[in-house]
Image (tube, rainbow, N blue to C red; front, side, top):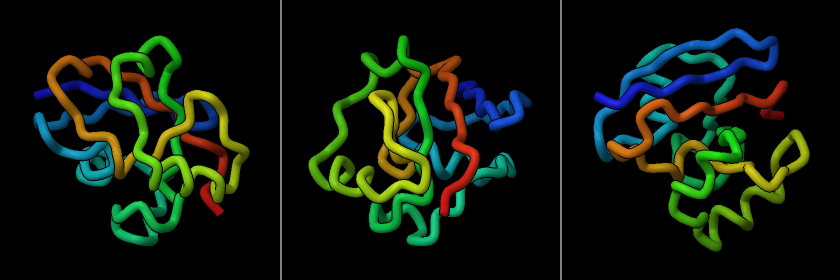
Length: 107
C-alpha cells in the first residue's frame, strides 16, 4: 500500500492508503477525504477534483495530458504551476508519502 497525505485548507492532514494503479481521487474518496466534489465521477470533465501537488513531488509525476491541461482552466481557485486534477493522477509505488493540498473550494 502507498501512503498519501491530504492537507486541508485549514492545515489539517489526513492520511489515505492507495493501491498501485488507483487514481488519487479514488484513494481520497475511499478514505473519506473531504474537499473533492468530482461531479463528473473522475472523467476529467468538471475540474472539481482540483488539487495542488507539493512542488518537490510534481517532477515525479507524469505530465498532465492536453485534456487535463484544458480542464485546469476551469478550476474555482486559480490554477498554479503545481495544480493537477486528482482523477488524472494514477498512484504508483514511488509516490509513497505524496502530499496533496486541497483548495478552499471546488466551485
